[in-house]
Amino acid sequence: EVQLVESGGGLVQPGGSLRLSCAASGFTFSSYEMNWVRQAPGKGLEWVSYISSGGTIYYADSVKGRFTISRDNAKNSLYLQMNSLRAEDTAVYYCARDLVPAAYDYWGQGTLVTVSS
Amino acid sequence: QSALTQPASVSGSPGQSITISCTGTSSDVGGYNYVSWYQQHPGKAPKLMIYEVSNRPSGVSNRFSGSKSGNTASLTISGLQAEDEADYYCSSYTSSSTWVFGGGTKLTVL
Image (cartoon, rainbow over all chains, first blue to last red; front, side, top):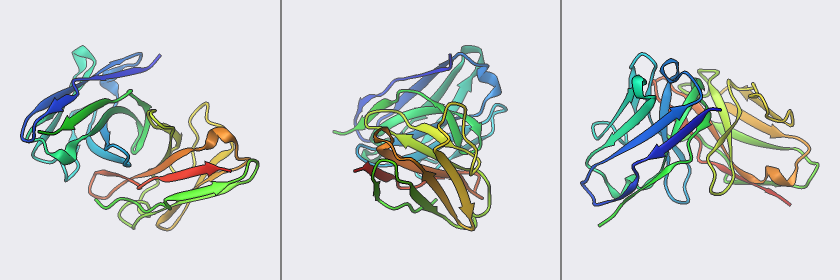
């Protein structure tokens, strides 16, 4: 059974940093492209970042230069390092597996990041 | 990276059909067949319902169908059921090698 489990969310002050993790199981993690998608409270979905199986990386303009996506295939894990956090980064962050481009067939349960003083 | 345009809400009675539109540009919806649709119930993670414009993942009811014309994609739900009440989001690949979602549509089953 495919499972994605996010962790690392919490309360952080503006300007602070946080590292999210996503533990994958039930599939050959190294063969799949992965994404981070976020959802602010009461708002819609927003794509955040993508990393291919070969390491190609893309970011949304809203997080470029502040967030870094990475993966450790040996640990079946996806990461999102978030620096210079702002109030508008407050959201539930989901990791999601690519079926094909723009089609995320498996999602984690999400981890809540709250940026507030 | 402007969000794709969806109606804020649609409604229908059980058994009826409804269609949700998703309008983008030639740089996203109109330029690629990488358009997907997601269903999200309150407090839950999104669920993939349609990918590559009109393909259904295994396990998704054939009451759900997708199509595209020009810069507008559409999701049609036929034989509306109470459990279809949820938020629906479209998504597309873009020419900037990024991905964009629509603002979401709340479906109410009357």
